Length: 142
Image (cartoon, rainbow, N blue to C red; front, side):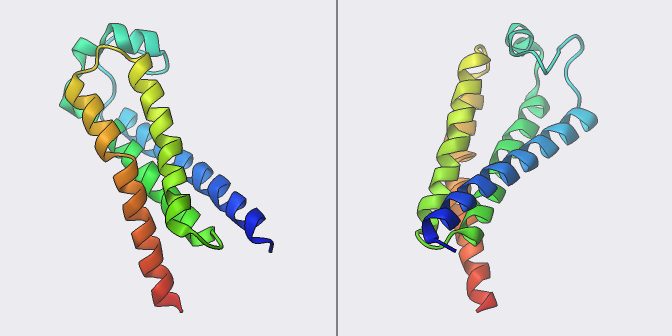
């Protein structure tokens, strides 16, 4: 397969798998922890208006979803890419970082530590870890 096409499909696959992982973890968090009473998690304005009701547990699952979605997406992209593996992992990290930045902007009022923790630790470090795990796994297969 043409390497350019293979790399494009690797990025697309990483994004899709990452989004699925992110959504699955968010769904589990909502099922097990739930939102504070009266908060509609599907409405960013409602979340922003009621952010003062959130406790640590309400911030932990979204962080985990963002981190694991990025890690799994980067892992997938590296496994599928023809070359420049770390670069494609970082593309996945940048994609999810952009989404996280948009959400941080949309849901204003979240504690600063939540936004810093999410934006600093959930995206590029997890993309790097996903790349390293995939490369280590590739070496075992050869």
